[in-house]
Image 1 (tube, rainbow, N blue to C red):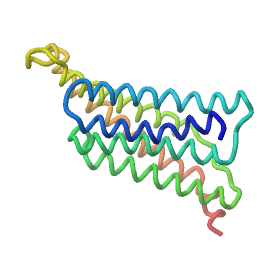
Image 2 (tube, rainbow, N blue to C red; image 1 turned 90 degrees about the vertical axis):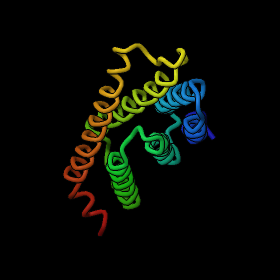
Image 3 (cartoon, rainbow, N blue to C red; image 1 turned 180 degrees about the vertical axis):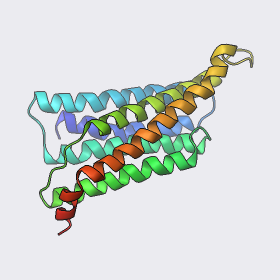
Length: 194
């Protein structure tokens, strides 16, 4: 197994750690979840960079990289939904888009049709990662020790707006990128079903 592939696989382990820490009380656990998510995000960039630089791109890596990305994003969003941070309907939209696009891509690959990533998909990914970082940071700040006072008043009043705004942005960009994907590749997807 190459290092880029190992880094992709590490996101599965990191996702389990994130979910476990999110389900523990206290600022230390929430901070650990945030740290693990940041590390997982770094591995996502690093595995692609190393695979290209070292010429270690492979069919296995091409499957594992997006799959582990989906596990990381959906696993973390799912844990945040169980904590009441992310509305269930937003998780449903995000999950539906990710699963539908992944299935469509794999169906196309099985017919030797490559559907390259578009700008909208990259913007969607950035918005999802940003929303998760905002949500995790809000959880850390809410549990920060301070004699029960919590974060300073201006920050405390801004937290709900930051969380809601980032989640709406991620949900809208996720939905529009999914619609754009199927409109852009409708001809290729139609031919891949034949």
